[in-house]
Image (cartoon, rainbow, N blue to C red):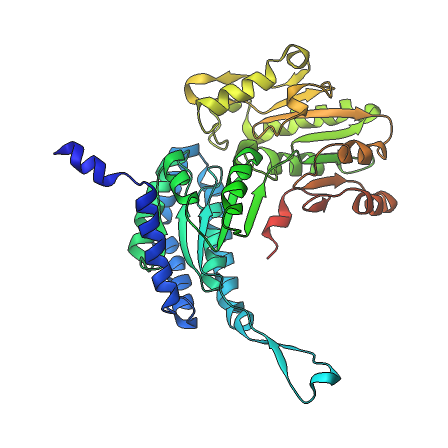
Length: 415
């Protein structure tokens, strides 16, 4: 009897097909296109977050040991802001836009009408499992689509809570959550979607894009990268260091796609910069950061082992100038600064996604632009300087998803 129940509970290709068919029937019936439906769903999401904030914070604590303040600001508050923006702008977004006509079609008129694509699949990431799950869903709802959300199995507490809350608060005939791991995701990717949105790494991104290509489905990929921070001399070093710390360790202990990945500064300024980090990191997280309640843990043992592999490489381990302590039983690694790591080391050739921060030294600050552009395009790039010409060159020379001067990560809060 138990095995029969288990078999029924399996989410396979047939199950995925049924889900898509149900959602497509709701979409074809025009249910999601109605303004009132869109407004009601976004209001329901706001209510869901208001009424369940303690449970959400607890789930994020279970998955990542994420501090309550960080969860409230970077997950819940940002999500509420997205919801409120969509509610405020949605009527305007839905309005037809007048288009110019030519003399040849006089006296005709023309307009551009925005229409929903249909049934959308959202595959989200584990590091911000609430924000990165529901933020794309907000956009899809506002545009009038039916949606399947596949949260990451690597953050199981949040995934389970999302499935429960979405079923209780949202319209289940148009919005569904599918839990599971690789088999469930594979079953979903076999289906024909009208759009797929994926947040994660490039390896899985290629799998998603290949699956989408079979059906000519448009895809939005939000992938990571190595986000550099250029630090010039002649700045308020204490302020700069604190802002880098907030963007690195204050954002899920470095487990964020826009977190600073490495620093570039001049040989003459490096020692002063390291000393500032030592002082400010102790102020932020105490003398024993492994016991700090203000730092998230590494998400799981696989990622913990991956980070230790980067840190313990022969050519890298001797470059640690601060931190390096680790607690395997609690999956914690202290904030770690490394100075002058080799360019051909593992830590400089893959996204770190953790609490390790290498510092690369150069002769002139201007040399940093070529160094950044010699690698893959970063998702974000940061620069600390008071030099107006350097700021202009930074914007002109560096190509990245987002550029910020004299701060880090704050651009994601701009709606």
